[in-house]
Length: 267
Ligand code: SF4
Ligand code: SF4
View (cartoon, rainbow, N blue to C red):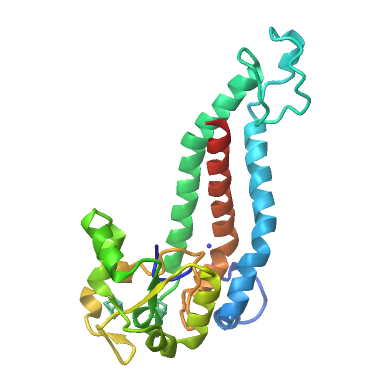
């Protein structure tokens, strides 16, 4: 749950060009930031399938590094009739490929998950290369799949994000009021959630696009955006970060989805 549907380094390829590097970087960032929400959405949608295949292939290669080499030659279980010796085959007890399956599961749930956590941290750390332009869009329109009552219940049950969210945001009385704030963003959010119900919120502390408690704003505000795969308002300067890390973030999401699939199949 998040308030926005929202993973090369900051223009690093531009610095290598001849001429004024900082002008080139500014141009590049301006271009990234001017992408419409529709373009952002289509970028994510069009690239994900390709990236999913890249992620699956990379995981398969990792698991192959400790796959036993031709254990069938001295197999104690004869005649298993398994032709394709991939990690998902129904190997019988006593088969060395079955041991490999179990090792794969342990590796993916342990060391590999740690690698993914480190990759996530690196993506989030790269956000520090960018700064908020104080457009106020994330304060004026936030969205959650939970109603205010549901958020309160979740907060009472110990969900920290829900507690933080309702400590900042209050619900719009109706969707029309929310739509007036940023019609393009509102439409894209609706398109993304398809048939799911979502609820719109705003922060009463924003005045003339500026935070009236900026120095003491809550962490949930300081840490925004929380996810590089969520849609951001076009005005948000962190679109440059989102675009810079989008391939890595999508790869990470694909790997996480694939690991969950492995766990379900092998666990
Ligand atoms: S507290 Fe300030 S920074 Fe946070 S949402 Fe409200 S206006 Fe924005
Ligand atoms: S939408 Fe982005 S640039 Fe605008 S105030 Fe929020 S974080 Fe800052």
